[in-house]
Image (cartoon, rainbow, N blue to C red; front, top):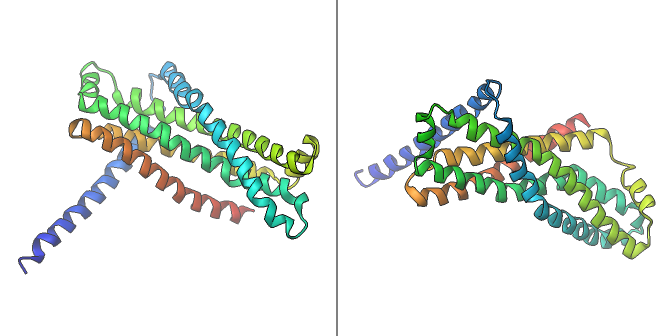
Length: 262
């Protein structure tokens, strides 16, 4: 009995910490919706963070999207060739990229690059007491640091998603043109023949949700970093892991909603 008691106590402590963390994260998230509409508005900082999120992620997003379009087209061709349905390849690629790959690939790349940066940056500010110094200086650190970053990711992830979709479709076109000598006009007419407004709208909604999740998770982990430099590394790592996990969970839910509406 005495041997089991410490183990039960440890499990109970972990469960309490888990639910305490969920409560803290919920309060942290709800505070955003209260602060975002309250002046003063940090437009300059929002623009700066949009630059950090968007422009500095552009090359990585472009390279990843281009490779995704080429690889997916290359892998899909043999299966369609078995049925003599190579003409369906543009439609298949467009449906896959616009409905799923563009928002998901963009979100995963940005969660690794942007989410980790936010977790590390805010974590280092937390452990060096810069956030406490802002509070002493009558500056609202939550509004200046968190609201601006979450707005930036929520705005820029959909923009990056559209760019990823465009680059991926260009990669797919180059692969199709190299193998079937299809013209660009014919390729894009066939590609968008099966794409509806709901497909585009659902991808935009997904990317907005993913952007909000990446910004909120990165800021929450950084804002609550502890134990010096070790805590900063832990905050950056957990921001990436948790944001990716939530993105996949949101993908499952949003796909179900979209399929129901379709």
